Image 1: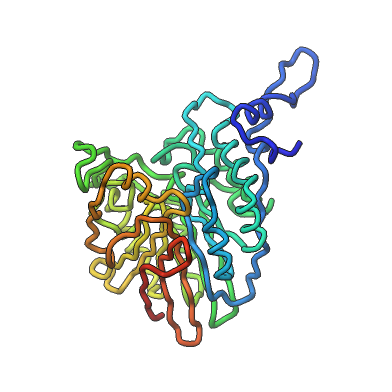
Image 2: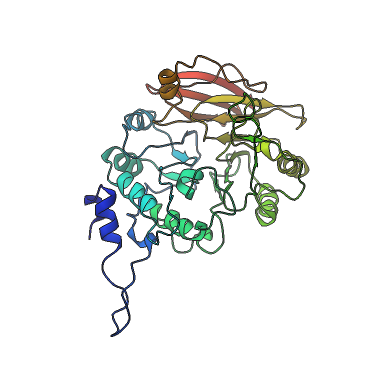
Length: 376
């Protein structure tokens, strides 16, 4: 059965609830596993031996809304694209629903979009998740359906049967691309599967305390002990340039939404891991916030550490800011310039000969609206 034909939740639920797997007499039928109901979305093959010079980054895709910007990104001819999370909005609010209907239907709807099909068939993809494709808004390690949603993720993004993510908990992974002298390492973290609960604000919607406040609890974690060990190991691998992908912002201060600042000791451990590795050829990329920007940390790290936030492909803050008449600018003591509240995506361009990296936030027409250049 081709589930691309189903675009409504009702039809998808019917599809997920029929066709018994067990047919023995006297045994009641059970529904198919939800991860078997998603359409695998394989992308163009990734040539791991070729040097990478241009990478596109994007996040926060409303699967039923316009996706014209994908054609703009493709026209820039990136060597690959990295999806930073919230790649669908499929929050599962009925945890008793064995079919995880909202998430399954969200992936079915994205798979049915001609713009996205065209994009992924042309451009290789690397993918991590965030809360809305993990299962519920702002959820972390205590989300009870995370094992099922990980299987849905693995099938939806057509991970090979021998992919390491199919054999362990969480969707973190890394890739090393290009020849010696032009080796690019891309590290994709999982900031959901192992994360401790965040500390809720005592003053909801107050500037800087909108949803969460920092916690000093030393037991709290963003990555979990095993992923932290793994990160130290992959940072020890040889590479000429590294891109560290976190679905949520690492450096950003000034707001009380989800970010590494809510777990400051976990962020200290991240910086310490980077410092102890001796790595300085590293750039960070994040999504989640429905805004774009470039951030710089150099006081805590002791060297210039840049972060490119790219969000959103088609659900920018400008939509509800205009609706609410909100003209305020989010504080950003470590941000370079004002945030980009309109549709945006990120781009990193690498000049291997000059040993420079150009970071840019680009608008829906592909024009750079925020830029920074660094050497490595």
